[in-house]
Amino acid sequence: MLSDIVIGDLVIGDLVIRDVHASAYRVPTDRPEADGTLSWDATTMVVVRADAGEAAGLGWTYAPAAAARVVTDLLAPVVCGGDPMDVPGLWAAMVRRVRNAGRTGVAGYAISAVDVALWDLKARLLGLPLARLFGLAGPSVPVYGSGGFTTYDDDVTTAQLAHWVHDQGIPRVKIKIGESAGTMPARDLHRVALARRVIGDAAELYVDANGGYGAKQAVRLERRMRDHDVRWFEEPVSSDDLAGLRLVRERADADVAAGEYGGDLVYFTRMCAAGAVDCLQIDATRCGGYTGWSGAAAIAAGHGLEVSAHCAPNLHAPVAAATPNLRHMEWFHDHVRIEGDLFDGAADPAGGAVRPPDAPGHGLTLRAGAAERYRVV
Image (cartoon, rainbow, N blue to C red; front, side, top):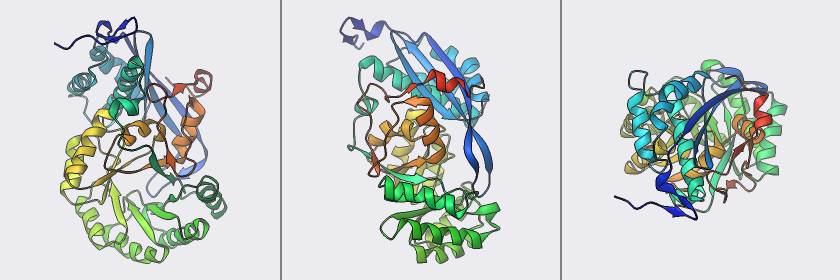
């Protein structure tokens, strides 16, 4: 049996998780947004709080408000009363609990938010930054600016790209293409050319089609984008089409990336084994939190691949900094805006990299007054 951990007058072994609570917030976009296959005017964030002793851990996911009910009805009963030091065991219990509800999708997003809250709680109880609890692989996390929605006109796109590259010094940026499910390739190519003019020759240019093209169409367009030195082609076809991803990867100069919808380790194993990607995207708000992230990163490493953190940059910074095979992290416009509005302690990407906070846990606290404006559940 392990000895109790004693910090000052606090005996960690005496603590149990006494409460897990979830709330949902719906935050409107600052202007209409769309990618190749979806449009939206608001983003819903589900925030989980887990309490033990005098500490509270915070986790979140970008998911329908129904995920909050999954936390309350299914997950809280198996987590409350548990040892806050034993997060992997609690994660496994949550996975077993949602067997009949479906491991991936809304239930998986709920597990992700609780897992992040539990790791944050553990780190705060120990008085450690999360990145130090995990163990640093590097001092900072490279980021890339991400937005460039298909609904943006040239002026808005120009202003956003120029801000990232010329004002903040971020040396890599991404725009959305595949407009209207791949039916407007001329405008896609126009926007790629515009982006290159704005950012100059030194910055890296990425594109994301969100599965909007067919495989051969994506191959043809990638050839035309070579004139603009596009380095990263995200989801040129549906991420479910592993054969199509591999076809594009084999014929493209740009690196092909996918994986953001992965909800369990089987998904990531299949994608890597199929030779479908050059870089595996992982989203800790979808794949099972920090626990799920670590498993997915290990699978990628076993296939000789780097990983990239998808969205939710302030959530990903600690675990990304602890991942040896990390390439970079997405500085996604919507989530940057939401996390900066609703949380204290948000990161600064100046110079193109984020340092994990030195504060205990992931370093973020919810601004209750700001959040209440958007509360759904």
